[in-house]
Image 1 (cartoon, helix red, strand yellow):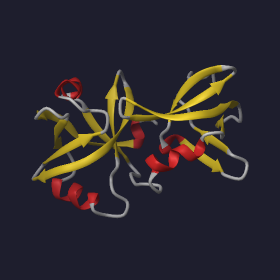
Image 2 (cartoon, one colour):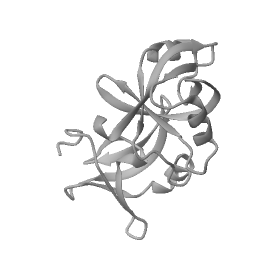
Image 3 (cartoon, rainbow, N blue to C red):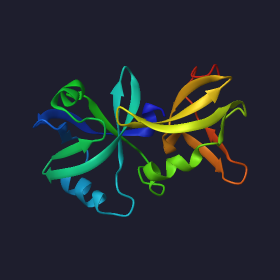
Length: 178
């Protein structure tokens, strides 16, 4: 995913308590809009934090509160005060076309056994497992006999062919020499 495909939602300005809850000061959207989005069918489920210059997806576990220009969020994988302090000050982005394709977190396990291809048609490998690492879902892929990790995020998926058990993904440059 490229930064130009994202919209700045706000900035993490405060840690709330000891369970990894953070307060986000919203930039271009009121908290009321965010709260309403949270109750719609296409609710906001993922935000992106820029870590080491790369947008990293985080699933929203819960929108705890929205008031004025602030939102209090619990992100998956951010479970302690120390975890929250690590992301304090981070810019929070959403994809321009944010929405949910089914319930992607539960549905990812069904892709075990699928073959991943890049957008150039190169076979990357077979998905051997789906795991959760630091709050982010990943595909464990057998790539030329080595186990490799690929972010299991539906925004990277170009096409899924259930009949042929294949997935075409837009992978970060250099991840597999593509």
